[in-house]
Image (cartoon, rainbow, N blue to C red; front, top):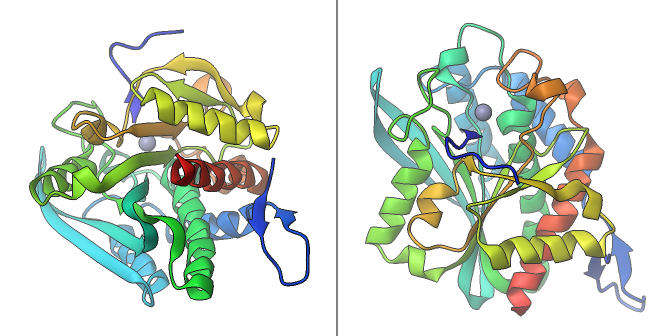
Length: 303
Ligand SMILES: [Zn+2]
């Protein structure tokens, strides 16, 4: 993602009902999310058409082999020609009629293919986050047959990054533009209560900006969720517009938020460089993210 050209400045834990026990407060397993992120980053660069991308696809397929996994394969028309791309959608059914989507991209930039860019924070961290969230959702589905609230769909999208170094509207967001159009055609969009994007929030030095094109009520719910855990200081201290995977959904009227920390290293100097490595991200940040995403799901369910 990039800053938008019209850039402007501007608690409780999960309640686990154990038998004969009072509800215990627990935190999200950020260590597990970090371990998954490590596995994704260890694949190496994952640019479209590259060997690492094929491995990342296999990794996701294997991880969700016992779940409802859809592989949404399509051909993107890019500046280097037609490129096969793969979105993955893991579905966890809920009792309420409607869907909450959590999304991340998993690929790395084609234009960075000649350096060892592994995207530890940019792609791997949030893929790890969603994989650990999947584990938690899977447990709940096993225990209760369905989630108590809305269905939750985890989207691992392809082609978020531009193919060429210069980001444009037509050379970026391939996977989510494709998915939003497809879901508009088949009526799925109308079932989506919220689209929540996670991007670059593994950063040890976590400061999540308020992305100004995101939906106000959803930003407010994320704020409330953060407050419940005493995480206020990590959220929304500054505001800016960011071009990212939420936009194809924002533009189609789906309530959406980009939960992003686009302040990575001194003067954002780790962003899209070989400096984006595992030592820059932490289990603690992923715990904060996971706590807030899971609590926000709960708040959306109650809304
Ligand atoms: Zn990026």
